[in-house]
Image (tube, rainbow, N blue to C red):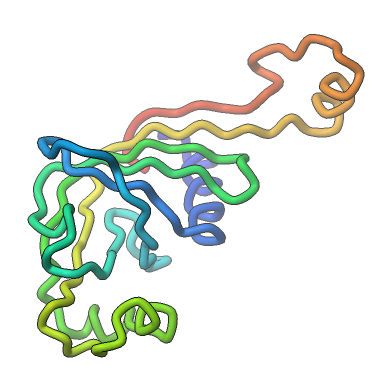
Length: 154
């Protein structure tokens, strides 16, 4: 994947770390999860979930991202597994997580999942000043003026 698009994705995702996750073989809908990111690990993201959550069983999964400013969209595929590294769990636990899981970081009904990213597809939507002018005045916008698209490792 183009480094610039990948960097844009990770920067935008860090500012708005929400993703819709679904196991590939599961019926039903995807659900919103808050991703726990590590700026040095662009191969994985983490989630806290109850052990009875629909994605808690792990396996092949897909996540969809639409960042807060609606300027980056992504579809990421990979494998969900339970994260067993206690140091990782300790490092990622925070007050926001505790608000969802008031039993605390040692609550046996809460697990940490790691989403090992295999590949992704990213779209950026950046009209710029010229594109915004065209949009506001009703003039046609060419595809290459609206953003970029890349496929591969994010």
